Amino acid sequence: MMKVRMIEQRDNGVCLFELKNDEIKVITSNLGCHVLSVFTKDREGNFGDVVLGFENVEDCWHGDGSYMGAIAGRVANRIGDAKFELNGKTYELAANNGKNSLHGGIKGFNQKIFKYKLLEDGIRFIYLSPDMEEGYPGNLYLKVVYRLCDNTLKMEYEAVSDQDTLINITNHSYFNLSAGKDKIYHHQLKVKADEIACVDENCLANGTFLKIENTPFDFKEFHEIGERINDDHEQLKLAGGYDHSFMVKDEEDQLILYDKETGRKLTMTTTLPCIQVYTGNFLSGGCNGKGGKPYENRDGVALEAQFLPNSIHIEKEPKVILRKGEEYEAVTTYRFEVE
Ligand code: GLA
Image 1 (cartoon, rainbow, N blue to C red):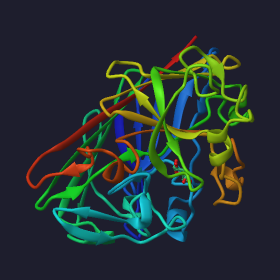
Image 2: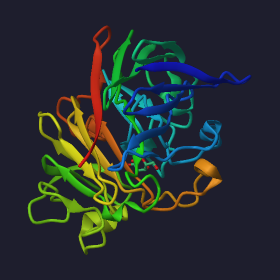
Image 3: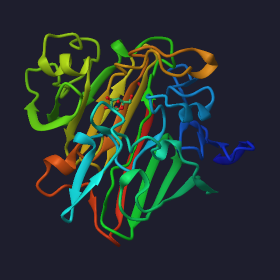
């Protein structure tokens, strides 16, 4: 039985919602469309929370750099030198990650209050990002929908702008299928990708690509995340672990994360061309997580479906460009099973 309800409404406009069926329970907020909890069953049928999340979602306003569970945008990931050119005009962004722009700027979509509408099988969030917000041109109308369908959490993104602009929306949930019992080193990962986008010393995609065969990035078959994470590989050293976009195939079930202790298995399918796998290399020292517990490095792995990071500086025909009046649409699903 599917149930969608508001569970809290605060004076500051922040609300919390619960989406629940027999397989999954999600707690989400209209603040940054944060996914605060996702409860799923383990092999014994016990529910556990498989994502990292804020104790108080408002903590995202205090400059926490984890983006736990949030929607990142207008442009997720990094834009080199915090500027870009579009139609012959240069747009300056805030450099909020060294000299680069990260996840939409100082006050990205993760910090905005969205309008909301409860649906039969989920919730729709709506945000109107005004022209030149965080330096991006065009009034952008963004819709984010979270739905539950049996054992699947579905995220749908739609946007349209009244001027040419850039867009790259992702959900920045960190998963831990042991429900916090363990770090993610023993999680097994499989990704349908032959290449990753290489990064520089600031984790900025630099326009080169690595064929992953016979490297610690080869997850064509299952490998534990911790198996090769400390290998002497330049790309791992630069990012302090995995923090790379896998160029996924245009197929279903592009990424599988599996925890053999609990039997939980997460399968991701996206219409987007990349999945950034970020092993929480800088989680320590951020905001407190649920239960007031501070998170540490490698407590979760973020799986972020998106366009190629730094696309505007790398791609000949950058997929991140959204032309006036055109519709941006993307769908990412997360299917939870036990095995
Ligand atoms: C993304 C980036 C990481 C890090 C996190 C937020 O995943 O790729 O380098 O900035 O966001 O902490």
